[in-house]
Image (tube, rainbow, N blue to C red; front, side, top):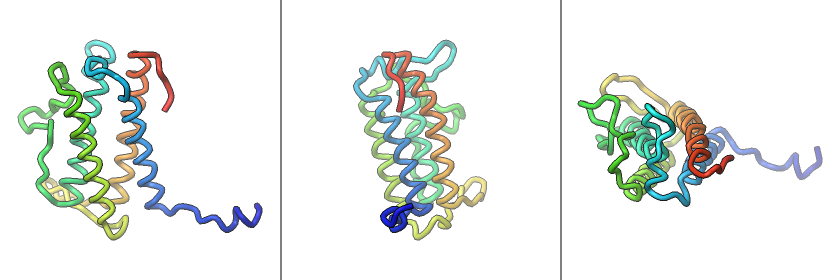
Length: 168
């Protein structure tokens, strides 16, 4: 190891977690870029309801739930999830407005970033009001990385089906 390598500051845990989550958000955005609304609505294979647009809608509510409701403690409304439809409406995309869904997702993750940045440490806790369960920012960031990574795998297959494009 040379002296330049020894003097380089490695990113800390918080920076690493937030950078990896941002990478996954950007990956999903790339998977959706350059596609028409109809292509974004295209389902993987019957009977699955999985589509790129459905993933965007689903992750919008995931962002709103973990950051907007649990971590910030606000009563942030979900965009697609409904109590009377426990499976949600996020994957019901036949008549969904793709531009609006992408805008809502962008707004949700931008707000999530702001909420996370305002936390003093990774040990800042939020509470899931219905259950009383407590979650640290560390846990939420790790969970969100897992959530995006899993769905980006789906997105990769969907994008390959649409136009053959693969990779992150």
